[in-house]
Each structure stands twice: as structure tokens, then as C-alpha cells.
Amino acid sequence: MEKRNERNRGESRVVSHLTVLITYTVFSLLLITEALLMNWEKWALYLVVFGIGASWFIHIRQSLSDKARLWLYAILMMVTFFFYGIHNTSFYDTTPIMIAIIMMYTLSGERGLINLNVVTYYVIMSYHFFRWASLFYRGESELPDRLAFSRLFLHLFLVIVAGRIAIIIINKWDEEIDLAERKVAELEEVNRRIENLLANISHELRTPINAVTGISEVLLKRVKDASIRNEVLSIQRAGSLLYEQIGDILDYTEIDGSNMIVNEENYSITSLVSDLIAENVVLEREGGKEIFFDIDKDVPAIMVGDDSKIKKILRQIISNGIKFTEEGGIFVYIYSVKKDYGVNLCIEVTDTGRGISEEEKEKVSERFYQVDSSNDRSAGGLGLGLSIVYGMVRVMNGFVKRSE
Image (cartoon, rainbow, N blue to C red; front, side):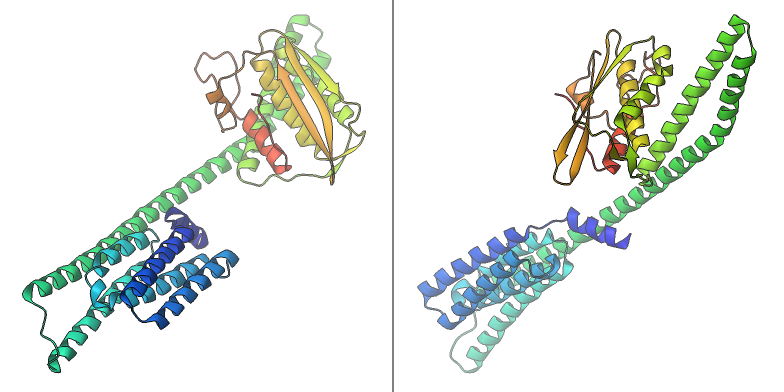
């Protein structure tokens, strides 16, 4: 949890290392230009050029961690800034430049960098104070006038305020991030408890539902009266529907909790499709809409995978198509694509339903989302079908592509 929080903090306050490096490079190049024009110490310029080259080399090679590189750029920039600020001609220009640097490093969320900037500025000011004092003591120069002193103290105050504002902003960010992390943790805990509750309820309901469907099966074999058989058959169908929905809840909780296990075993796609055709309960319940299966001749007779999950995926997609198809039927085309590592099974499902909007296409994979969620909707269900499809395909390292 602590590592995740640290990563979240870093992601929420991303300072592009490239931006910092470009800023440092531009500042150094401007410094070199001014140094050449003002005839400053040329030996220092070789160090500046070396610092630029070393920084770009480390950035390209990604030799250090993100934080270490950021600190390296900051230290080199401050060394360059110190060389710039100790000259009389650039003395008063250091303040606006330093304030801009402080604002840039505020985005990093690193208080240490802000303190480094402020301390560097203080060192430059102290250097000038001692230089003035030394010159005045030797009688080589007079002290600056009152206006110069007032400007100096104003600049010191502005840098202090800029540094303090930067620290306040960073502290405020930390408070907001801590609050958001606590809220996320609370929501995750509530979500986990709800999922556990759903799983427990589903397991508890399976026993009585099995009893209902089992007794219904026994009664269908014993009862001869047609009207009673129809009533018992209705009970059995209702029990089967409820059993399927309980299974959907269990599948969903496994997917959402990343607990779903994929079994790798040999299976026959033709046998799997035959089982689906034999399960005509859905067709009878939905008014007997037609389903057409087309299996490409190049699909291998035996494949390796989790056939139970493939069957559930097909059942969910077909059931979803039936719900929203008033006339016509569903066409299922199964084919394979050869890869270097083996064969990918591809399933293409088309129906003659009314379709959905582009906005709804983006939401259909969300949990509990239903295109028609009104109380008098024509299609039932829990809104988990496509979430289960997307989840099962994902755990089997596949993907779902929606038609345009």
C-alpha cells in the first residue's frame, strides 16, 4: 500500500524530466552567450558544457532513477545559477529567474528542491554582501545607496515568499492526495465486502435452488397430468434461470477480485457447440428465436484452453443477442487464426437486433450497466453478462472487439 501511495503521488505531480533538462540546457546556453559577451571566466564554461553533456547522456541512458535524475539536474542548474549570479551585471536578474525556477520545481512536489533553490539564492546574496564588505573595508568601494539596499531586501523577501508559497502548495497537494487515498481505500474495502457478501449469498442460495430444480425434475417424471406438468416445468425453468444468475454473480466476483483460474486442457469446439445447441432452454424461454452456428473448416479438431469459460462466453453473448432481437436470429461464426505460438480461436457474433448507440458501446462492458435500466424494460438480467464476457476473455489473454 505504501509503495502504491508513493507511486500515486509521483504520477499526480509529474514534472517532465525532459522539460527540466531543456530548461537547464537553455539557461546554460544563455549563460555561455552572456559570459562570452561580458568576458567572464572561460574555464567555468567548460564545466557548464560538461554538465549539459553529462545530463543528456544520463537522460538518454536512463542510468538513474527518476528522482535521482531530477536532483542531479537541479544541482547542476544551481551550480550554473551560482556562477551566473555572482557577477555584478546579473545581480538583480537572479531574483526573477530564481522565482521562475522555484515555480517550476513546485510541480515536482519535492520540498528539498525548493529548499535547494532558496539556499542557493541566499548563498549568492551572502557572497555579494561579503564582497561589498571586503571592498568597503579595504576602502576600494563605497556601500550601495539606499535604493540598492531596499531593492536587495525586496528581492530577498520575494524569494522567501515564493519558496514559502511553493511549500504551502506542496503541503496542500499532500493533504489532498492523502484524503483521496483514504477515500479510495474505504471504497475498495466497501467494494470488497459487497463482493464477499454477493459470493456468500450466491453460495447459500445454490443449495435451495438445487433442491427446487431437483425436486421439479423428479415430479416431471412422476406427474402425468398435463396442467400440473406445465406448472412444474415453469418452476423448473424459473429455478434454472435463478441458478444461472447466481452463477453469473459468482463469475463476476471472481473476475472483479482477480481470483478466476484458467484451466488448460484439450477440448473440441464442435462438441462445445453441440452442447450449446442441446441447451435449448434459453430458446424456449425467449420465444424460439433461431441461432445459426458456422464453424470454419480450418479450426483444429482439438484445441487447448478452458472450454467451460468459452462455453460461458458464447452463452452470455448469445443470450444477450436474444434479449434485444425481436425478429430474426443470431449468427455465430467460429474460425481460427494461426500464429507463431499456435492458433487463436476467434468468435464472431451477429444478431438482427436494433443495435445500440456509440455512447452505449463504450459502457456495455461496465459492471451492472444496462442499456434499458427502467423498471418496465423488456429485457431482464443483472447487467453482468458483458462484464463477465470481457473479464473471461481478458483472463484468457484475449480481447473483445465491438463492431463499428
